[in-house]
Length: 417
Image (cartoon, rainbow, N blue to C red; front, side, top):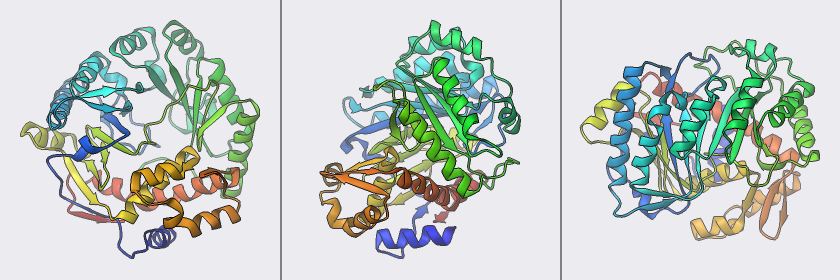
């Protein structure tokens, strides 16, 4: 699979140069010059560790969590104070881990960020189903959270068992969501689990919208090499049939498709921390993307503390993009929304999209992956599946390798992908 992604990278970047991440960073970050800038905060704590989850997380303890939030607030001020005045940003998202384990200090984190940033499009936070209580939801809403995403994974007991999760009290969750409404209530599900059928996934989606959600995300199961998950991946043919069928079901129901695997029952409901031109990340494993570089913080909590305590950034690795590399990164994650606007590409890079990738766009149309309408390129169902299929290779070739190393080394010297 690395052979496939390497060939694609060389073709699209017109270079044999790999993506090279080095143990270096700029102490002053160039976020002030960025437009369409998003914010991300990582809270790595969990009460228990799910065997399928690849993200940076550690077992929760109150003392460790409090120490982490202290360092996090310090990092926010360290970075935010680099820009005179307040920088306008699109949005703020909290991920994890289980961010709700720091509910008592969420307002403090948001207030620290608001000293340096003006958040224009809302604040989102991820929740475990156990956290969906009236007290937690009200505390989050009072802190300024406007969107929540609940990691359901599946309402079906057989899949909860496979994933090592316990049964969800749907009635209690529905009651809490009715008592404390949010602008967006998203529920996450995993598809392509062993034995999962169209009816299984359809029932989960129906249950979500009936239980207070106005947005659902249906993420594919990916078998990371460094996790301890016993779950086997679904064969390609079955996966495509399932994705196509459930996508068509959602579209027939009148749900709006906002990305490869997200659908909403009302037009303004959205939840995504991924589709941003640039973003600024805080906390362990958080990443930051700028016009010419991408950086990722250390995964190690103690190393994070040590760096922040001496007034230095917790950056573990940085890549300095070539222009073509940055274009590919922009296209890959913009396409996640299923649409690419040629005008947006030209605004960002100062060169027409067709001039840089005219042949690739022509070929994608010929293969039935995309359709074009006056400079808007939109994925077909076939194109959406193959985007997902390629992302699977990308994830296992690049992200799996990088995260696998960074889970063991706080500050690797160099990683080539």
